[in-house]
Length: 158
Image (tube, rainbow, N blue to C red; front, side, top):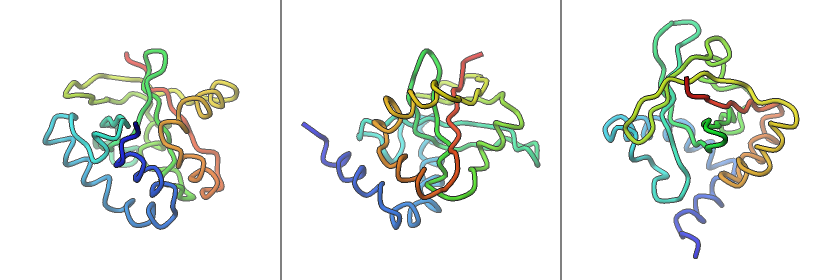
C-alpha cells in the first residue's frame, strides 16, 4: 500500500507552483531539522525518500556550506541531483563540488568524507532512468523546465 503522504508529495512535487513556493523555504527547514536531529529527520522522513546533509566548500567564500538533498545509494556511493528545483541555473552546492570535489555527507548522525564525481553518458542515463526518477519523479519535470543538462553526482566515500 502506498503511503498517502508520499503519494501527495509526489503529485505536488511535479507542479511548477510547488517548486516555486517551497524552494525558498524547504532547504532552510530541512537544514535545521537535519542539524538538530543529527541528520536523522527531514521534511520527507516517512515518505520513503532518503535525505542527507551535504557540506561543500564555498567556491568563493571558502566557508563550509551545508544543504539537504535527496539521494540514492548505488555501488557504495550516494547519488545526488543538481536539479535546483527546475531553475535555469545550477545550484550553488553543485558548482562548489565542481570547484572542490571533496565534501562531507552526514547521514543518520554520521559524518563521512566523500569525493564527488559527475556521472556522464550511459552511466548517467542508466542512473537517471532506473534510480533517480523512481526516487523523485519530479526530476524529469525539473529537467524539462530548467532547459539545461542537470548534473548527477556520485559522492564516493574516501
